[in-house]
Image 1 (cartoon, rainbow, N blue to C red):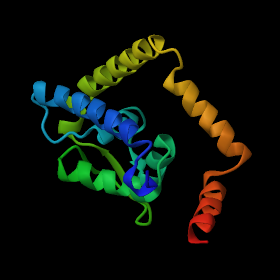
Image 2: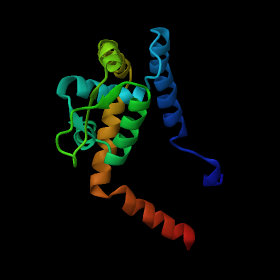
Image 3: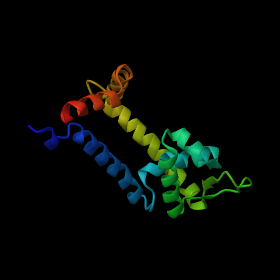
Length: 158
């Protein structure tokens, strides 16, 4: 088999996307429009610590500034966040809009329900996904993915 015709982790991505779609369906069922699953953690953080800068949100969620900037722009377009009073022109802070505050209780409940569901699911598995992730991280601490990838690319390129 040619490795170009394979995707070892494709089923993992497919599973995660299917679960993500199931979570998003809860928003549709509740009549909540415009909320994407990637908005939930930043919105919960804003509900607890607002106003926040994009960098502060990115640090709390453990994503890049660029990724959080795109997420905040999408949340702003959906009417879920707005600019806070920004006394310092160099630093822009955001806060939840009125609509954002209205949907946060549902999002917090959904987050807790999702975490409970994942814990129940892991309890059914002989080797929990969280353990797999820890084991992969340990292996990558021993030899980083980039190093492994570059070595394999060098072999492929001859």
